Image (tube, rainbow, N blue to C red; front, top):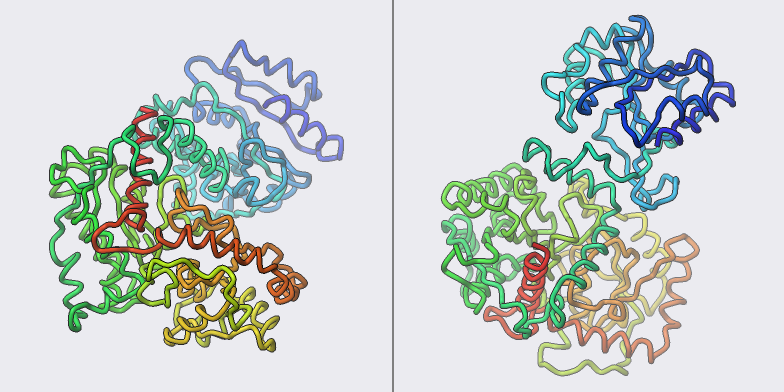
Length: 601
């Protein structure tokens, strides 16, 4: 790394950026690296100096030692040698670092493993939480107390946040900018940073979190996880399989939560045999709870359980109260969490890793504003958007909404769909949604408005493309899905109400514009031929969409319908678990996860 850093600096010097630049290197003696020899080969002797450090590696000791040897009026730039410095960077920190008033903490772009040095979300991420690169005048550095050796003499991480806190306490401004050329190259962890042997559990957890963050994007990590599952489970056991004896069925302990978190929520909207909550498409949290209680997977001996299910009817609670009152929803979940940790020992035993929380409202764990308290737990969520911070595809499971009773399901009678059926319309699409922005407060339900608008404008004058209201008119929605060959689905209100689940159950081929989403129970279900992915979202591509959908051959439509027939049974819930239904498929995935955990222990 040092040779690469020196080469980068040499190139900058050749481009004229040598004025008032001097490299100070702290070097802990190591047989693996002769820092002096590397620098002498790359840089003039007048351009660098080396401070030899003794004893156990300590980053904070090294940084403070370097600062001590520099004149009190000089400008310091603390930077790691695994960073690529862009042209013009030194001028930036000189311009934006102001004596006695402001420090500069540029944000670098951190590359994932084996990715090119191109700033793109597929190649890395902006380290907005890191302040390791810091420009500050030495007199200001001394005024705030430098790096705290008493706290971070040998500890890993945190020293940058600690000094930034003190800088702010001393009324300095902190200038931050995303520097496109300031790139952190991926590299294996140094020998001194052994996550497994960190001094505290918090350091160990944070260290592993950084390691995972740097391996790849969520998609990359999900693929690694799935590959690991396929290679670690005993032969013959795969996700969703429920018959193999190689891994025993999972045993699930269902917490007997107080009624305020479950049944009392139903009473508030009780009308006849069922409450409004039970008739909602967001009732999967309720039906999963009931199905588990009646299933063969339940155990009443918590000490013998493989998983712990926490029944909380959060979507129902929000329906009974103000759906926009986030604080009320957060308090509801917080009380449930406190009940679990105060009355039972099992959550703290594993930091919640074997606990399952169902969030059937589209906002998912965001309803529980303190969801990071249960971040190790397995979340059941209706939305598998990989851009959501609370969703981890290698841990969480996307569940289907409970919509069979809301759609005209072609599978309800158990018969097969007519592969050659001629439907009246080529496709249905979302018509204009008035007041979406003000009604949802600019949240995710209003995302992708530009895409929906472009789709609507490309098809609105065509007689074989059917406009559909996404709110209120459920009868019209049901009829339109049943009479259309394709269901065009974009994010936002359309994604919330006409999810692929509803379309598939109606025999309407879903058309999706993004692959950046995990579909319901995707560990098991093969959607590759059940969903039509349309990747060209350019203006020209959207303009061609009607022609493309009209041109799909009948034999291809028949193939999609056969694939939907294979997927559909697992998207349906039953109060008593049936083979191959949603809860049976879900427990098969849990079984596979448990099998993997045992295999790698």
